[in-house]
Length: 86
Image 1 (cartoon, rainbow, N blue to C red):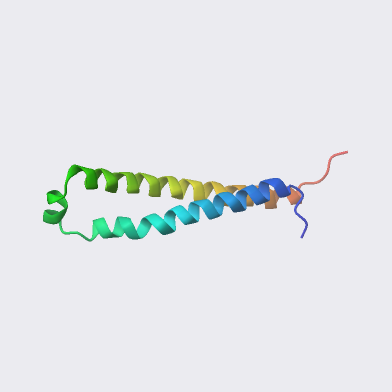
Image 2: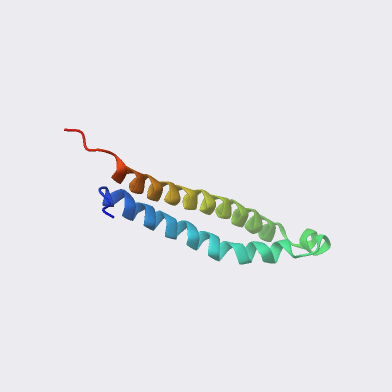
């Protein structure tokens, strides 16, 4: 299997790993806030609530980056099937 566009392939791998790292490190922190009962959550100060919202936003961006990495990998693998035009 020969990949003709290795630049897109390696960029796809890097973006995929970046997205995975964001998801892996943010998910346990989000779960910590999600498992709190509602009374404890409302008693937290605004700084911690803002931190929770930023974690959710960062997690969603991590999912988008992961999807972009998968898309780049698929594009680089599908381009090897294209016929050369001369």
